[in-house]
Length: 95
Image (cartoon, one colour):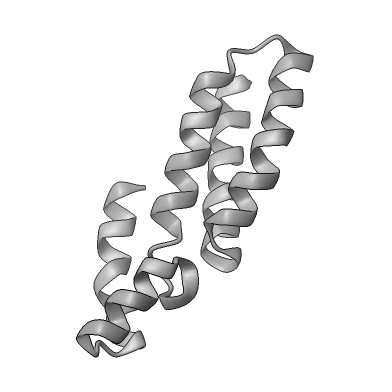
């Protein structure tokens, strides 16, 4: 049962990170995870690693998902749609 909870949590964080960026997910998800893992007596380390991995890989898909994306696109004059098209495949492989 805990494996399904872990998978659902990972998928939820991934989808939310694509939409909201990684900062809100990390800031609110970490606090939630600390209380959640303490209440159930779970080791928080795998949950936190999954949270950071999901949030950081998913935020690379959108142009505005990460400030570094904006700097790269503006500095090299890369189209926003082209940037997302080229980053969606590495994101899927990483996830």
